[in-house]
Image (cartoon, rainbow, N blue to C red):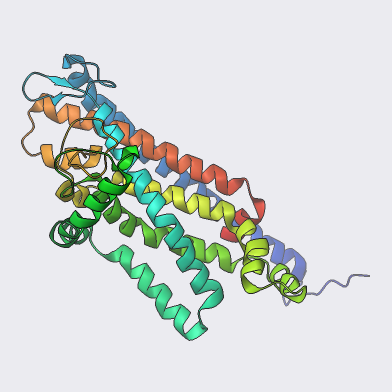
Length: 326
């Protein structure tokens, strides 16, 4: 039998509590809905702006925008996004391949191997990498990394030149796709490591303790109990890092040699991206050239949006992780 507790004014405590919840939930629900609508409105406004500014340039284009390798909107008004989109995807994919294993290793070390007194400062140190301005990474890449990669690039070309990525003749090293990919990998590593670390820390402790109780080593416990639980989170973190790499501007603008060709040779000076091309060409662009750059930005906007949507879908596939991350 339930006893209703009476308050000073004679009302039921249970009804008063329900009334408070109803009064609080309404404004919060409206505020949350309004925030979502405002965000969608901002994204729609950005898309409308990009489309409206790009249409005149696309109409004046004398080439095919999606397949043309030439980029000369200021002169002959022939320009295409093929080489820029290829460079953007290739550099970001290489950065992801380099950064993801290192980030997972760092996240596992902080969450399951490092002593607590070391894990906290190390986690903060990794997070601080995300606060370093991108221009600093770009300058570090130009001054330090590019000369350092000269000898390793020649070795890779001589010994693994049969593989398309390491092939090439003539100039090897310098401002290459490899140098840009390494800088991008360092820039996205904190994002992937931080999210992966939080996912690994949320793995069910009962599963971990059960694996250890059955005689599993720490690595076997991680392989059986932690990695399967954290796989969706790691994949989504990697895709968010991919979106970050695709939109990077200043660092790659300082490193990439700004060529307009499609080449899988990452050891030769063949590299460019949409963001780097916008940064290098916007200041001197004519009205048609500015519209062409905005059109390329629209393509980058769509690609990045698709990457983030895919990451959100992967998170939602695992209800346990979605509830833990909420």
